[in-house]
Length: 460
Image (cartoon, rainbow, N blue to C red; front, top):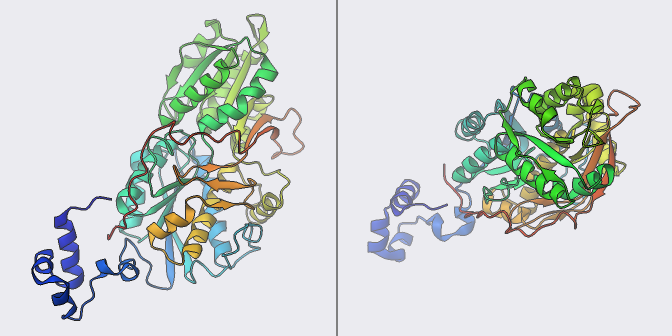
């Protein structure tokens, strides 16, 4: 982060009782003679001066979630996961995925021996509210790391703030290509997959299920996530041979989508792609079913509906409407690996229900931050960033995973899922019908642009 000479002088004056002008005039020898060692010349010492450096016996993490608004269901499960992660870091419970995590630095004694404390806040599924909440946590509560969000708009706003403040941001559920693309930041890291990867994973599944001569109509949430998912799905389906009608943008938290659904019936489309999430996804797909779309034919084909990003929380809300509908997911609680089973058992014992994909990615982000601090041996953000960049790991439920240094995007398997026709229980709503390999969803880091920016530590 750039700091003006005036700011440098002011900080040095406060820390050491001398000015930049005096330094230039008297030279290094004059300063040493005072018995004061300037931290700027000693990396080990200077590293102790950074925003919210935890000096007591606790360290505070900030959890910002959508507890109200269109993604409130996601936020509620996110909060559960954060509470569980803190419990496990502090040595409580059965440890969850700490024993299965390939990195063995976490011992259940907090982070670097400091007990983990936390503060929570509501981003209201709104970027400004999320940014303001994160700012209060940094400036008032001394949070050394911020994590959260179920909206890419919120994630991008919070990530930019954390870059300004020199606070590491471990994003929650953010699916826009922009988060680790044009809006990526040195202090921001994303465990969740993105819209481009959804297209790679879902395109072949749709081609096999529905054929290569289709006409798609997109209803799209009108913000960064919706735009990039729409773009990615159009690219993936047009590569199959599908045609795309002009997309229609819808506001977040619209509630009633009837005015947007009515034109679809006479548009000439035979597939409706709903680029909606949370309550918006539940409402739009439920209302599409009420319009009888799944019972209609168009262009001599059965009319189909696609929900490119879906969660079991949405599936529960949509009920019958989700049956047979394809989408993609970051994780599923019924995966058979030891890490997924351990997390599902731990989460279920505490909260009486299986964890969702946002719970898994949120929990994983807290463990990944704590592990990076332990491996770095310090909370000093530039060193923690280095520990995360290029980090390869396993045992957190997604198989072998890499945090790519160039854009801070995680690369791992991506799952194509489908709403089950005959669920075995109220939580058995989605089934994995395809797995895109880590290699197949890996792309050139330059395709989405953006610059990470500097990793200069910031003194609050």
